[in-house]
Image 1 (cartoon, rainbow, N blue to C red):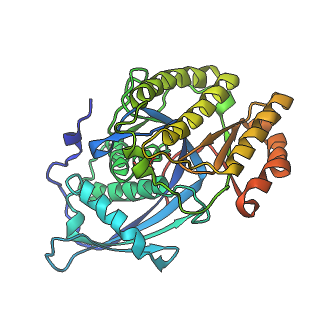
Image 2: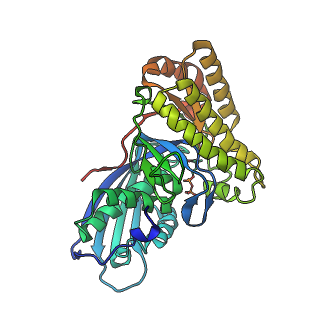
Image 3: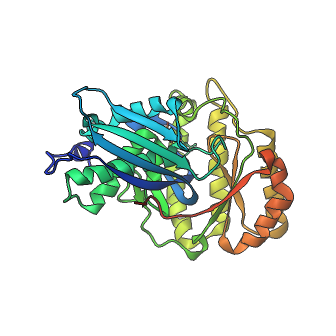
Length: 363
Ligand code: DP6
């Protein structure tokens, strides 16, 4: 068992007196069983499981330099695509405040954080998961300078632990290809504190599983995820939903081992619709799907019925649709997407992605 206190470091053996930098990429992820609802300190109300993606990622360079003054504040500049990004700074400030006790060197340095996404920004794709994951692995590279003896297992666990404190789902973006976050009886090593790799043998049906993301609506969401999670407190169906997520995780574990695509489709779509039903039954209630989201869902159902090809959809906290399908159906499904679905996307935009391996060190 790993406890929160295990991530508070002992006295470091090394000092950093020079400036330096690291660069990492971290991908986005797509949940199959959804995280929706949390307790204090970013502890999830239920376990979730996701596919790590490959192409949608954030690349972040972290430059650090020992501070010349003794100021007790965090000191950092932030750039997105080479341009100062003042409106992201409060997020990073809050992240630093949450993790300071676990990475106590933060206040001794000035940082320049330069970040870019491989997907179009304001595409409505969550960049917080990949962004926070990329920050977390950079900070772990830095901690390794202070503690060169650090074991690999600790490096990755703590990276996921830190990422979680930035954004819950970010803890599932450190490793691949399938990650579980949240304590669950069906996954022995699972934890509320960090994501763990799904170590069972995954059926070849899920190898190179495809995710084509249809950009239905790129506008600002009416309700943020943070507010949505909050609304699960005092939600009339919360208790049943959290229990169901545990059951669905156990089912998903079996499906991933057996390679049963029909059952996969059923479970994934049910999870997506349950997530959105939770939103619709919150107080206040809200809807993040758009008319085109429903048009796409109906088209997918029709196509599946007509062809018996096991393609399905899932949704995040937004209107965009993730179309999930096995690699061997790629040609036909992409044709279907081009012929019948992209008309429902803003500017006909979509992104082709697939299962990936997690964060990568680039420098
Ligand atoms: C609907 O991880 O964005 O995508 O922890 O408040 O940052 P915070 O929330 P966030 O929630 C994402 C929820 C979801 C489902 C999921 O990814 O499991």
